[in-house]
Image 1 (cartoon, chains in turn purple, red, blue, orange):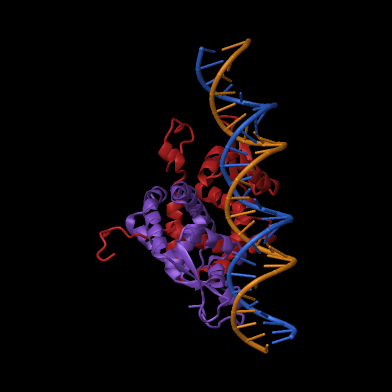
Image 2 (cartoon, chains in turn yellow, red, green, orange):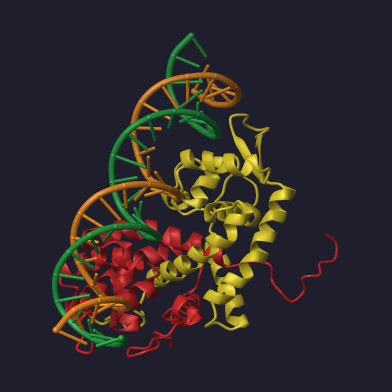
Length: 164
Length: 164
DNA sequence: TTAATCGTTTGTGTAGAACAAAGCATTTAT
DNA sequence: ATAAATGCTTTGTTCTACACAAACGATTAA
């Protein structure tokens, strides 16, 4: 063990910085999102639905990392505005399959457009290329559909198996 | 929907992804941080103090983007554990200058070390180079000490001028 | 038929954080 | 010297986000 003092490992971790940047962005986003009737959570949910595609509520809750109980209310909000749609799964009629509607996709696009200015402000220190790079890294990092399920790995790798 | 006029601008914004990743990391970090007697906020504060250096409470609150009233309690926590030190500014004795102590720096390093595993788990989808890249982008993006003050740009560019 | 599962509803508890108001120490302006 | 403004602190209120638990209907599986 002695031979390797932590040479190749930079001691600094991303967590705090991620928090920091995320916080700056979120705070400012709220004022832009409010007139659209959205909140950060809603935006996040719509984004995940677009990027990861349709999924059951359990899977969605797991991806978002929130309690499925709380997801219900979130989806109620979104469905009330016709941004997402819940349909019963044909395979297992207990399940609800959540899907982004056209309206939802448009709203999401609109929100993202409106957020450009905010992002510009917060990311002033980065060039366009760097912002692209950041986006693609984040995209890739969050592409891991689920963490708990893959690690915990219970039986549930069933019908609509996730994990890559 | 056919040919999109939005040519040079990628429509996707980082905000939601940043939220997403930050959330995943923070949730998992908490369990690691708790035994150290820290919470995400504390870690963030220590990190900012190390990276941006000593600053007054006002400046710190502004950098962190939290209310200065709430910062007081945060600093009380940290000072109680001797992780930071408040000294009166020699220039203006109304001001408190906040500084990371040696103990604080060590604790921070320890926390970061302990968080390596968590980060590994959350960032599985990224290679080491990509993680480095991500870190450096985040670092650069958050280097902007303050946003409101630079934009709002009142008189206050005085004695301990910030903004870069 | 019984048991388990998925989503829903309701309710509880906790923590983060904004905001307001008032006070003390100190500095600046008059 | 006195008055006004500033920086930090304290206290207290309020909101919101969430996790968590319990109980229910619908549905599937044993």
